[in-house]
Length: 65
Length: 321
Image (cartoon, rainbow over all chains, first blue to last red; front, side, top):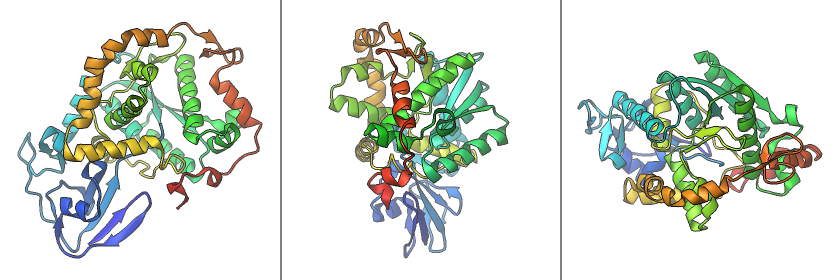
């Protein structure tokens, strides 16, 4: 599956089906700091992502207070 | 994608988000309902403002300021926006486009102030001229201009998009240094006093994962990219630390900040009163200040006399990539 990430913008290919939580773990990303969007739809941690899916992992941390 | 097994706690339909701090999953409609309820609870519990009040929302183009502006309008409040053009290269150009589009699409009133056009400087130049971190010059500029716009425009309250993560991270920083003055002022609402307008933070009961989800589910197009010169700052580091704790112990952030407000802030009330004691007026602009000239006027003097500095020269460590 194609996984798009931000800050900085980059893309990675991940082989095989896996859940959202397993994808975040594999990329060493903290769930509390990200939303996962599959084919344009927001999905929870136990959603199963398939090989053909296009995934966006959107960071939600911001701030320059 | 195979549909998630998790179901919405409220209606049993397939969930779109898991919120471990609530030990629950929610569908799109009930996540929005949760956001609306948390917003109203913050407004009511902390007596932020009333339905008839005129509200000025500080907007940046990011998710939080759009979320709070959208939620307030959605809830029936009268809220205008104020955007400050900071002159941070392409980032500010993009921010301007997002803010303008948001306001135009919803037919909302947007006020804008451009630092370079109206005060002769921008944030990269101010950072170099003052030899301080860019976030310092940015904070001084925005606070002054939001206050000024609210007072001049006759608004009842300035609203910012500070969320639970922002407040917990600031609290962590203040606790790590036991900065009593800052701790005493870290409240969800500050009353109008000494020439300052009333200020309120209606998103303090919502995490930024929840405000980002609100924007996604409401079709709000916001600037996801982080400010290039804020990247890598201490505030962001504190957020990362808290989220690592939250991952292992859900709802820690909410307990840390909201219990501080309930249990600790009342004990600091005397300090709050002392910190907001009588202030003089800036000899230049009339803003409240402890000195003869306010921090903003001193910043304008320094920065406007300096040759313009391109943003690339003040990028943070990660921003240079």
